Image (tube, rainbow, N blue to C red):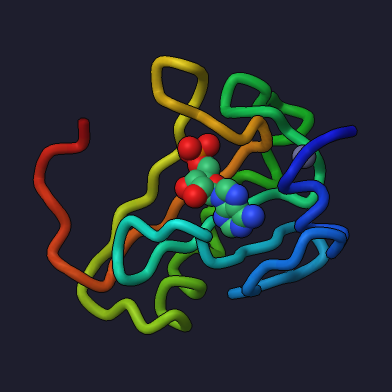
Length: 112
Ligand code: AMP
Ligand code: ZN
């Protein structure tokens, strides 16, 4: 499958790792939109939030249990935002489910 994030997981495309376990991978965004900008992804290929279902929801729950730990380990101390763009109107550019962790500064109040 020609998926950029699957290639990052397998290591054929390099990334700066923030966290890894048997189910998920987290790495620094190549074009950061905040002082700390990390992407958290499942190791299984799920195209977007639209593809989350009862069979694969465990890995999404696991991501959410690890996000606070990943944010803290990256030095975020005063809050952060978690974003998942789903589909064209939301400007999802990589069709592998990912959660952006944005922090390290006072973020804007508007979300779109
Ligand atoms: P989205 O627009 O929500 O699909 O987010 C995709 C994100 O992937 C963007 O923030 C990109 O900057 C980021 N990105 C694209 N290629 C890479 C890469 N090779 N390494 C790290 N982040 C990447
Ligand atoms: Zn993938």
